[in-house]
Each structure stands twice: as structure tokens, then as C-alpha cells.
Image (cartoon, rainbow, N blue to C red; front, side, top):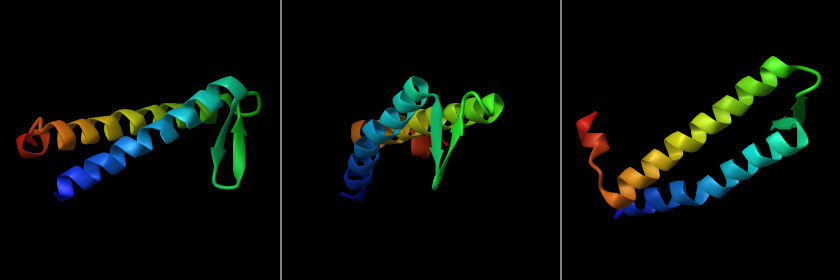
Length: 77
């Protein structure tokens, strides 16, 4: 039962993470707490944060798929 709940929460987070990635690419700024990193000001920081967001999206999707579809990845690791 808790696997289903955690899987659904992870699945619900995916659109929020994707929205941050899309906005960062479109607007050229990544929100960090109460400030922003802009692509023009600090390109390296912007791209690293964008890559971390993409990694978070992929890992969250993997967790959601494992818990909802029962791939058994948790037991394999």
C-alpha cells in the first residue's frame, strides 16, 4: 500500500519538475530558492542546475515506474 502511495506522489511530482525545466529553457533562468540563475550571467551554473533538474526528473520517473509497475529495481539494488 505504501509503495502505491509513494509511487503516486513521485508521479505527481513529474509535471512540476518538467515545468521548471521547460521554463528554464524558455526563459533562460533557473529558480533557486528566492533568486534566479540567468543563462546570460552564469552559463556554467545555469547548465549545471538544468542538468540536475533533468537528473531529478529521470530518477523520480524511475522511482515512480518501479513502485507503480513493480519492476523490482529496489530489490535488485
